[in-house]
Amino acid sequence: MQILLDAKLSTSITKIRTKLKPIIIEWNEYAWKNISYIDYECGKKCIFTRDRKLEEYATVITFHVGSMQLWNYPKTQSESRMHVFVNFEPPTNAPILVKLPEDFFNYTISYRWDSDVTMSYGCFHSLEGKNDTNKWEQRERELIIEKLQTYINITNYGKCFNSKYNPDPDTSKFYFVIAFENAHCTDYITEKIWRLRDMTVPIILDRSQLRGKYTTLNPYVIAVTDFKNIKELGDYLNFLMKNHTEYRKYLDWTKFYKKSYGCFFLNDMPCVLCDLALKITNGFRKQNNVRKWWQEEVCIEKYAEKLLLNQTMNVSV
Figure 1 (cartoon, helix red, strand yellow):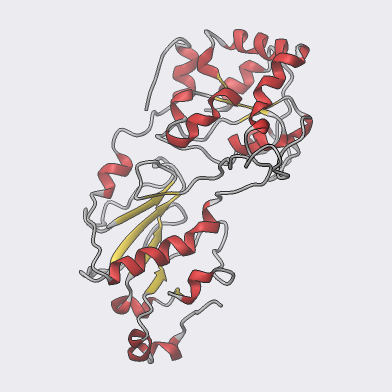
Figure 2 (cartoon, rainbow, N blue to C red):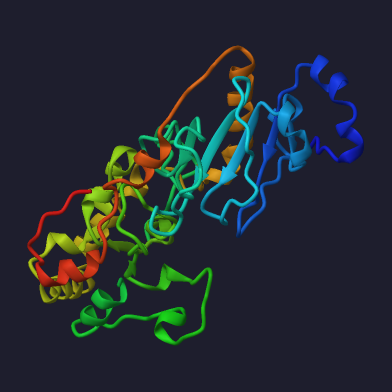
């Protein structure tokens, strides 16, 4: 059951607090999808709301830094309240407002492995023995894409290529999928690489992005930096299309991991926030200099251009 507070319920704060249910305020919404708490068991342990009038009573306030500029942010801070930085966009797309105090955020939730809580766009779940029935059956970015087209046929989608945008293209009919991100920043890996679940092989820019649990993806992707130049990459892709035994090695992950999808961050967010709120009511505190952590020396600007100028460079973020 989802518990949402409105102006009427705001007057019943005393009664709510006696039930020991922490209040979580979602200060601003995601730009592209709203979270629904209705189907989560943890929704019965915490109170979720967007009612900013309850600021002084909140245990947790979340701020989706990647969705919009944060105007009218809370001007007060409290020992009994934590401000949670939530972001799934890179710093180049979603910087922290300069006017926010250095100690404004206490806790971080993002795609980065060194966040307080890491939430990714996808993950693998290992098969549970040979009898597991949930298994598979065998069957700036534009710069590099433009040059690669000289050596291999590429189908493009989206306004960058003056073609109709398709939010969910059928990649299963292709040997490879270009999985270049719009920024080269620490741990920034989105849903693009997880299109390997369509039985296609992702091509990424650089393996340095595959840190933490993402290192398990290394055998199943191709990186531009594995090759001396774009022609060598194109030759290798053509080789794989003609040699199916070698190509199928990139699909070997299907032998070890379940077919079902999992670990999409929106699915886990409500319970993560409720667990944090319950910890805070028991005295948990944390301080962070989030601005420095989020924005200093974590991105390489114009990475694709630099890669083309020096294709033997070895860059780690």
